[in-house]
Length: 476
Image 1 (cartoon, rainbow, N blue to C red):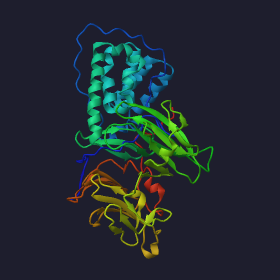
Image 2 (spheres, helix red, strand yellow):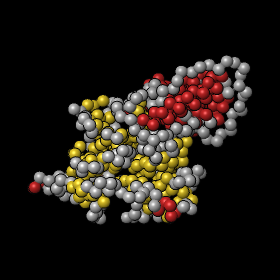
Image 3 (cartoon, rainbow, N blue to C red):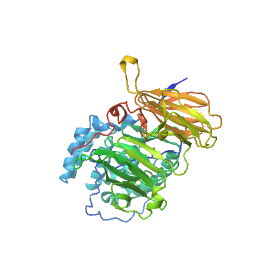
Image 4 (cartoon, rainbow, N blue to C red):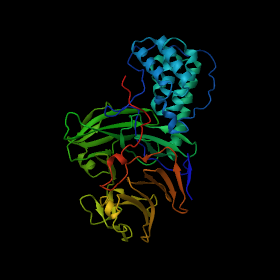
């Protein structure tokens, strides 16, 4: 029996993906207000008792909460940004207060108001908007609240000392949340959804341009993410940007452009020595902490490492070592049958579907193999055919095949437990419990962190970032 709720009763060490900075010129950033302006002199801590602050509950109850750029307070926030550019901090305070009166959950306005209060000497008013901003968007501003020069004096006050302790406690809680979350896409932005706290933690702010992300399974480790746009200077080539972010620390590297020749794919690899490397038109290059690309010295190891491969708006993981199954793959890595590596069982897709080799995914206990099969015939109204994809799971030991879902605009599969599988389609994201067949829909999620696998006849526009992004691009 299928149910539709806003919660995900599944535990998963998530595949983390993406960002606080904008990607490829399409994204939108919060006003950082850390412009290397002269640091405010740090006052010594006052000889007073440090108060106890209530715990921060990071995230929001729904991804719709992050649509504040489309709500009533945003026009006043834009006025506040213009006043900030003039360094008219009194006007910033007035505009932000009006923005929050219209929309108490406008997180950008709350952050800017906290900074503006400190700039105007109203340190006793900093805490309330700061709590709103950081609780709502922990990845974007938690670290900034500990380094923003305008807040230096406030941080040395008793309430500021208590704030630093509260951030440390919140980081521990967020780390636990990330361990059990699943990363989903909401119209091209990545969120970590926690089934226990029922909270959505925003991971990216790119205006809906995230293609995919690469990270180790489990924990709150740094991850790399990819955005994509057509190159204006080289229309015969594809242009990608790859960034890195530590979602727990709230620090990252802004996306750096990685041009790729027409007809070639981008590869992103986690390096054994730490950090990430990208393979594009210039060979393997490491992403430096300064946000610049430098030649990678471990090229041989990178050639044979597991990689996130991005080609156009499609992306998949190429695992190192032996594949979970082999087959007589065609040029599109499709086959009518596969031989499972561990058991040598032969599994065939129902005719006329073909198994997509780039969708193969072994369960954590290696007892089951999930994949997507596509009907690669182009639609023919006269004969009643239509482009479609089907998600299957097969038992590794017996080769028993089960159909889980069918869709017309592609499917993606991802294990979220030994007996639970996430399936993304044009209808959203569902978690299927294999033992019972029960499907639970994650309300608001449109995709997983990797794009759907689809028939070559399906329209790319149906698959890539459908609908409105959660964070529309700013032009100011």
